[in-house]
Image 1 (cartoon, rainbow over the protein chains, first blue to last red):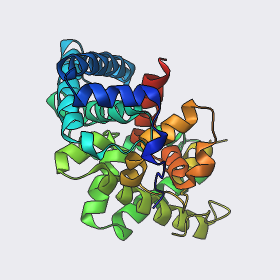
Image 2 (tube, rainbow over the protein chains, first blue to last red):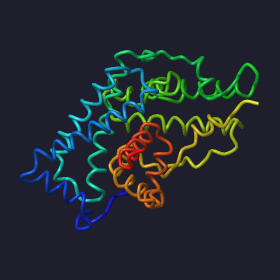
Image 3 (cartoon, each protein chain N blue to C red):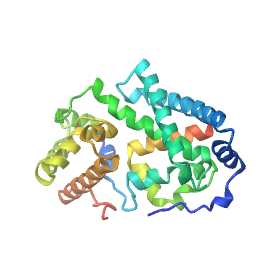
Image 4 (cartoon, rainbow over the protein chains, first blue to last red):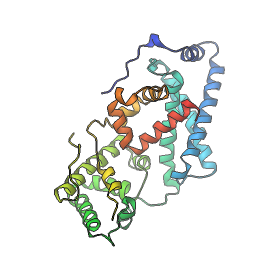
Length: 214
Length: 71
């Protein structure tokens, strides 16, 4: 594991001030200041991601405020875990950025542009910029991708691959729907990518298996 | 000619990739290094490989970097 290893005695002045304020008599004012920052960051983050989510309008602002509130609770609960490996504000802001991701994933299903298990395989060529009508090689590649998915993946892996790669469901949305961590979905896709690459290389569509041995 | 590039890039995996959980566990440290102009990828090659291959974690990296740099 790639661990952070900065000793706490290296704490920068700004971080020290935050910790003193949050741990002392100025706590309420410090919490107000931190919350205001979290709200500002959350609102900027939902606006930045608005183009890639079906969530719109006031719901985006609601998500931002909820994310800031939940991040604030998590930060205060985990204050003792902060070891000075980064600036305090960077450590704290990470909570709100991750909360925005998780909440956008959950809210996706309130008005999803595509339902789970839609299996829109006809859209796969566009996703990869391939044109099977004009190029026999593209048709062969797409057929091989489909064969690997149908024959070499488990039903769970096939469902995940179809949702993420074929139907374009956001990874965090699928993780929320299936009740699993983001990493579990990523691992399924990672393994599927290796299997498909190996199959395409074996059939001469790709030159090298690539650096995918793990 | 069909563009194999997008598919090829999608299928390319990096054995150094540490996965979402490990990458997110040190994201704040990684972002501070990047914000300070240091070579975060050299210090954390597995995290760099993951952020390159995982869209959602890459988005979180971008969001946190913008948050700390005021972008």
